[in-house]
Length: 440
Image (cartoon, rainbow, N blue to C red; front, side, top):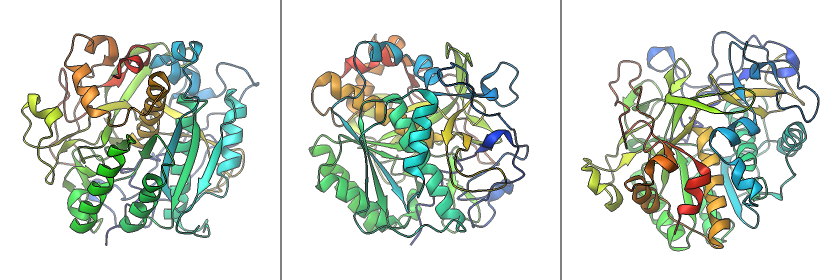
């Protein structure tokens, strides 16, 4: 049975070391066959040139790391820059912070340092400590720091928890851990969230080609998503980091495919962009679809699901993904505290630059938590409202339409970003101050 191999959806965690101001010589890749084009799947991928970003500056500084300076070769963003770029900051001033709502982050294995990582992240960037709960419904697998797959998931945990919190700073965060990254174990953990009503929104930063998931499990997953939607639980997933492709089921190659769970019509799939914003203030400049040496925005058309009602006006051949997008490139990635020892100069107190559509899913989940607070209830299924808003005169006021770039990758022809919806960046990225209040 294929794993939901922290393929982050693909190669997300592409982490460039910021550890204590020291350059890393290497980071581990997950043990898997080499894919087409020399890529490694599932992967914590790394750029061949590592960059030190320096130590954090004084607490309260707007710019804390050297990668936030105009001279940075590999730029990065902290919470305040992303909050400003996507216009969350005015919502916070109005008291819309996610208070009273809960975000579930579903991941596999565990991270023994997640509480310390979250505390360091909050201290560094001046964020409040959230109500943070860890649940392992099928038991907690002992952490093996020598297993690259487990280390990759631990990094994923730090990314998801910290950046859901950064965007909804007063929402409660529940980390739900599957005992492994086998499909059945991930599904079991997600089922626990739904059955016990643990959260208003579920964030899923993982995926695999639809054809690599056992058909019976794929049906069971869809049935679970139906029950979640009936309970008005919002479902969000990353669309993948391999462009129009996904790793083949044996991990030996790339194949043109859509990623599940993002391809399920009941899920809001999140693609990736390269964000160009002011490194100090976060003032938005522009965006293009993400496609470079770090990966590319996942997107394409399902071979399992027919065109859902909300996409029929677009005349698509089947369910198209993604629905929306978010900053995902490592070039302009987000800062994450990650204290697992992954090489010289790393360990407790270390920060990294992270990218991938895995960064966007928890942040769109946090946006959903804000909409729940405004509505004073669970808003549930997002896609009907997203597509209604995007096809209305409100589109330009609520989304950045990303119209440049493509998601072709490693010889696999993908799709072009165009005006309006496209299978690279969906409808685009949020202008939160106007989008959040629009939900019915």
